[in-house]
Length: 184
Ligand code: ZN
Image 1 (cartoon, rainbow, N blue to C red):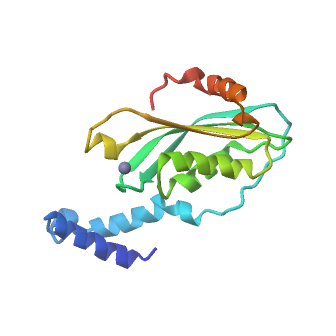
Image 2 (cartoon, rainbow, N blue to C red):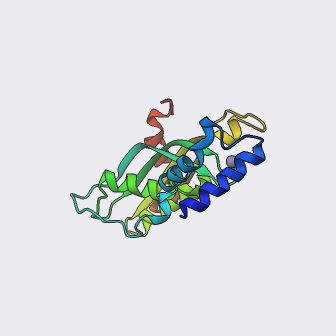
């Protein structure tokens, strides 16, 4: 990411909005945004290989409510919420921090919620587990601040491996949804 170039583009944008980029409050804004973009779009630089931790086997592991923040690729506005992951380990158990890192790898880029859900499921499934189910609940500022002003939360799910069968989907969904009333 070229910080200088981003700063120039943001300055142009400020002018087009009808503002004065030289006034005090806006003077450092292009620099702040360039710095912030490095952080919120750091998913592109994340390592492709996920380390796997070997622990005791278990039938199903569920990691609930991993908080994420992402940027909608249609409007470049934030969408954010929680992702829950269930997987059947096949002798390999991922450390919780690894799951968080996979979520961040795909959240910290221009995204849509449905693809984020699939990206996380595909990355974990490619590590040789028997099955993965990923659920995301998110609020989208592009929907809340503009357009239809629809405040509804969006839910998406992706199933891989043994969780793709109808019966398994229902079981895993009820496990994850046990605390669905929790606020985002
Ligand atoms: Zn959007």
